[in-house]
Length: 107
Image (tube, helix red, strand yellow):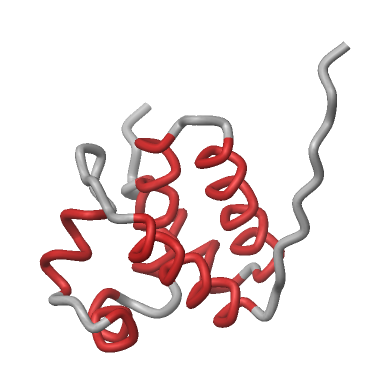
């Protein structure tokens, strides 16, 4: 059976229409980042930016060119901690959420 719709389009639409899904993706991006899976975290953030604030508005907020932000949030991107922190902050503000982190001791 042929796929009739691009997966990214489906994800973008879901982010825009399902606030809980968008929040869950932001949570996943944070978890991926903290678990050392930076590449996947950047790609999830890229999808969130595309579907919420957009790279042009993010560029204004972060005071960086949008092309630079696209590179930062690519699979091979390498955003600075300052830029990444700012992106997380902007997205959490856009989605109206805050972060609460807990540490768990391994057994």
